[in-house]
Length: 253
Ligand code: NDP
Ligand code: 8X3
Image (cartoon, rainbow, N blue to C red; front, side, top):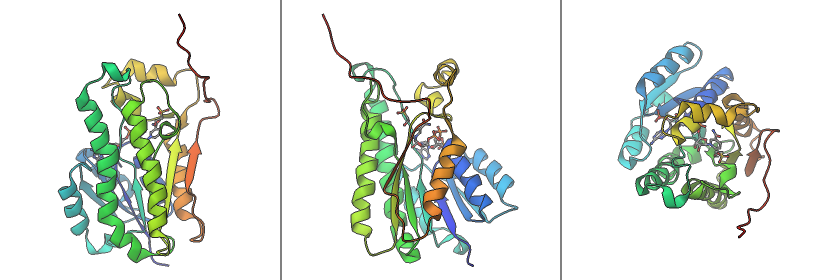
């Protein structure tokens, strides 16, 4: 059987790194991207003896860089069977009226523009791969459920959700599947990034409960990508058992 290859954005941490390990365990070739080159090199060192690994430093916000990296993929990594659109971030957890506009732009540029940059560049190779190929997008529960401090982050994930479903319509007949994975609270570097390095705030969020782990989410990413080709999971919302919804908020005198 020919080896399949997965292209992962944001492979330097959290879900992306755990997904690299999960796909490697199943024998897939890896194209690993992210901005922190030393972490990509570490992962290549860790996994390169098991499966073919190509690393590329990439900021997904840069459309030209995305196109160049895809055009320059080595021959052995040209046929992509799965794209994991994972690079993303939240910033500014305070109320909308207390945030910096630049943080809103960074979220839109990464979670929306970056994701479409990579998708657009890889569509031709995914369509060539045909039946059984997959695009796995990292949305979030925040794309469907509003909560204070989610403002642009949640809205960017609502884009990911609808873009995923719309792509399904256009890709009908190509065999390429599309899934929006929508995790709830998961312990990664996500909160450290969201709070701009506040280690105590990050630790406090996860303290005394049982969040999802990066490996829990990677298992779901691998699951949807390795299902038989006739099955498309459209949306997969996953929460920790110890997380649920709160009631409506009411402003009172
Ligand atoms: P991490 O902060 O641990 O990982 C985020 C990854 O995204 C890093 O590898 C980072 O790499 C990469 N990244 C960020 N900005 C860019 C950029 N401009 N270009 C390329 N890569 C970038 O967070 P998670 O693993 O938790 O998050 C992964 C995805 O899952 C995100 O889209 C997030 O919104 C989503 N998500 C997270 C949840 C959670 O609770 N943790 C829940 C639901 C969804 P580098 O900095 O090296 O570029
Ligand atoms: C991240 C999960 O609950 O912080 O997308 O919005 S949450």
